[in-house]
Amino acid sequence: MSGEFNLIDKYFVGRQNQRKDVYLAAGDDCALVKAPANVQIAISTDTLVAGTHFLTDANPAWVAHKALASNISDLAAMGATPAWVSFALTMPEPDEAWLAPFCDAFFELANYFGIQLIGGDTTKGPLSLTLTVQGFVPEGKALTRCGAKVGDWVYVTGNLGDAKAGLDVILDDALRTRVAAESLEKAHYLSTPRVLVGQALIGLASSAIDISDGLISDVKHILKRSEVGISLDVSQLPISSELVQFLDDKVSAQQYALSSGEEYELCFTVPEHNRGSLQSALSHVGCKFTCIGQIRPQGTFELHDNGQKLDWELSGFDHFN
Image (tube, rainbow, N blue to C red; front, side, top):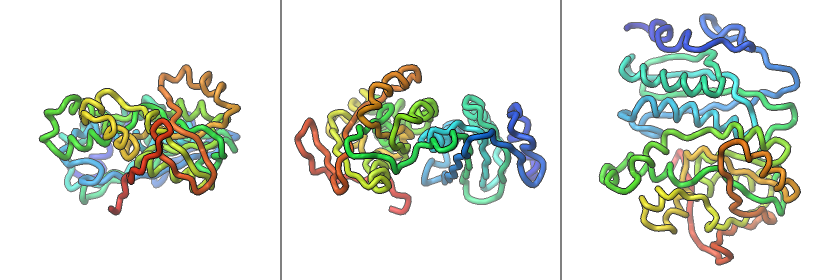
């Protein structure tokens, strides 16, 4: 194999059925697409860099899943339906042994969510992946971070903390002997974008965000944009039995649940009058959701365990620290 265009033709072209809203996906200077009427287009771009977001010897299929799933999660947080993705790949040299499983996993996940690759770029350099996803959300209905009101209830989907424990395993081989280490490593890479949850929350949730930098950090984005505060009950945090077994300490598991980045679960707020409708709306999506606190007046940031205040000083992931 040699040359950029041979690489593109072999691994990225002709791997998917053409969506009806895609007129031209490859082979020209730009893709040509058309959005349906009465929708807004949600767009998100993320970069994953070897050595920062994944190790160079990581399973390439898992890297592909993580790269695309993390971007789709941004669409889910807005209530958007995935449609298109463009992908820029930088790698030191063409590597078929790496590209084959990467692309198989990438297109498997893309096809599952009905999202079509419509272009991108390949270039030589340190291994990194940049994806831009686009999706549709009904006009004026997108979930944002700025609608939370005092008295709203705070929810999260799934379990929290597993991704952080999985990263511990990835970075320290000595931890591989611990109970559940293998499943937690897998959980770090193979998150499930909560697209159906996001869609079901339209008209019910007052705000939403996906948990990419840790709940303790990401919820503050809602508080800042909505100009409110929060009270969180750590006893209600959804924690897997695998995480508790791995850490052998419930308090540590709760702290992991608060600070774990790259979970790609959703955190959202719901007014009291929508709580009944929320139960009905999410009953069919196959994803558990848990109430973990309530929105308070601006300036309040309280962690407690069944009413007992905690003075934990925790932080989430910061790309520059």
